Length: 92
Length: 252
Image (cartoon, rainbow over all chains, first blue to last red; front, top):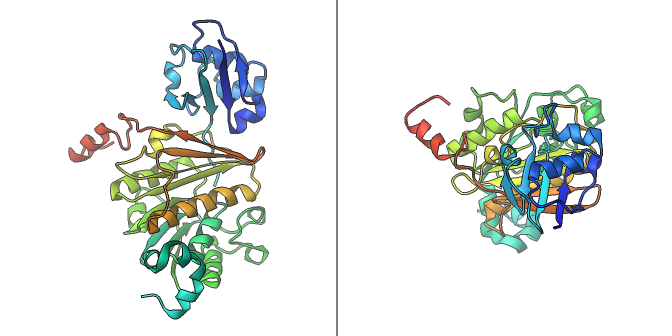
């Protein structure tokens, strides 16, 4: 099974992008993103809080459709999925 | 009616949308919230395009550290109110249009009156609390809200059409943390001109808008993408319950 994870903006600077992974069957969206983010502490901390939950402003998309971060733990990724993870930018 | 001078001035864009399109721009009033990094290119391009009335609001004073990106202002403006500087520049760009430059802080109390009967609201803010307020006022007044935001080399933009597209709170229910954001001036240049293009298209009825689409610009790799965005039925600003709350007068 192959899943592509795309980070945007600040997350991209810290973690890279277009990361192709081969997760085990039954892997949740939250576990997948968390696993990749752990390679860089700053990147992980930008996306997850101290409890390991997604920070409230993080936007998650699966194949172009929004997944609420609260549901990411029970959303199981499938072969060919493309996951997008991004922060809204705020400057003007 | 367009004058001879206007016909000449706008000749090259009348080729695109005709005298009728130009008349529509002339008859329009656009509200720009902010005269900073995004507000500068937005206001300049809408002024030179001949948008008949522009209201631009800012509460700040020009600071030296603004000049890397806020191209309405220059060295000689340091210490001036941004609205004074903006008014001077925009008049120089186009003396045939009406510019209202208002020096005030946008609040829940004054925003409806500030926007008045404008045909659209352009987001040139640097924070989400005021963006959410602008979004709600656009929903109330049923006028489009042209969102843009930037950080560093990155930017995003979308056009919100009340009742048709997701609103800002559907797309970004939670604001990112406040920070002194890094930025190179070309980034608000890219996003601000995307927003100005959206306004011109909306007013002249050209092309297809960034509706239900979030445009994302990555200047570091010079790539752009778009993400389809959907309405949130339980959105506190535009969801089904928001309407019910409004009709029963329940305070949200």
